[in-house]
Each structure stands twice: as C-alpha cells, then as structure tokens.
Image (cartoon, rainbow, N blue to C red; front, side, top):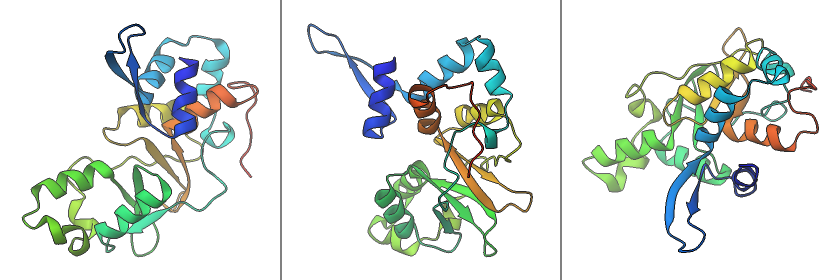
Length: 200
C-alpha cells in the first residue's frame, strides 16, 4: 500500500492498475479514495484518533499558502478546461461576483454536460460555468476549525470530487485539501498524526 501511495503522489494520479505478477493481467484499479477509506475505517491507533479530532488548520494538511485557483460563474467551460489542464486539477472552486465560494466544478461535470450538448464543437466556448452546476448536490465547504475527521468524511463521501475547499466565516476561500494531500501527509510527514503544524 505504501508503494501504491508513493505512485499516487509521484505521478499525481488517482488510480493505478494492479497486475497479476506472472501473467501481467490486470486484476483491478486501486484508487486513492479506496486507500483513504480503508485507512479511515481501519486505523484505530490513538495518534490517528487524536489527529482526526484536530482542527484542519492545525493538521499540516492541504494547500494554505498559495491562492486558490478558481473560476467565476460567468467564465466559459473552455476557461475551466484550460485551468484544469494547466494546473493538473480535477476540480475548481466556483466563486460569485464578490469572490465568495459558491460551488465546485469538476471534470466530470463538464464531461456529463458535453455528452448532452446538441453542438459539442462550440459547447465549451459558448457555455458558462453556471450552466453545468446544479446537476448534483452543491459542494460542501469546510471551515478552518472543522476537524480532520470531518474533512476526510467530506472528501470520501463526495462523488466526483477529490478536494474540499476551506472558507472563512464570510465564505471567502482560504485553503483546499485534496485526497492526495492527505496521502502525502501520511507517507511523507516525519510524524504524521503527532505533530500538528499551524499553516503560515
């Protein structure tokens, strides 16, 4: 599992093929979500339980220092696709005209809408972000004082989303935590679960 987690982090992928050693046949796809679900459900250590009750802002997990990549409701899906590809992301925060967190748009949202588009050639350029939202439940936003356990639950329960966004009391985005961030913390931190870090 550790080697699989290193592959997830090294190659920035969310699923890897598991092959049968002798024949090379594909046995199944192992997803980062499945690994996190197993860790979350089966780890009964005291340190892990304490870490789950730690506020996410003190956990050492996530992107806190850099601005959060986002799109507005009026931007085109072409802009969304360009940002997703350029940043190697699977989702983007959607903000309203005041810069408040509104929802999240994912690659899956775009793919589903594109399949239903009457004119796929111009669809991405002509369609605003607002047109593809509302096909699924709205994204859940997290606050800095929410626990690591709540963040993990949100990441693992959301379909097609591998990231949760953290907002302040005014709905301004301040950070994000992805499945990959959690895995990277577990395998690369010198003392995961034990040494909370306050983000700078």
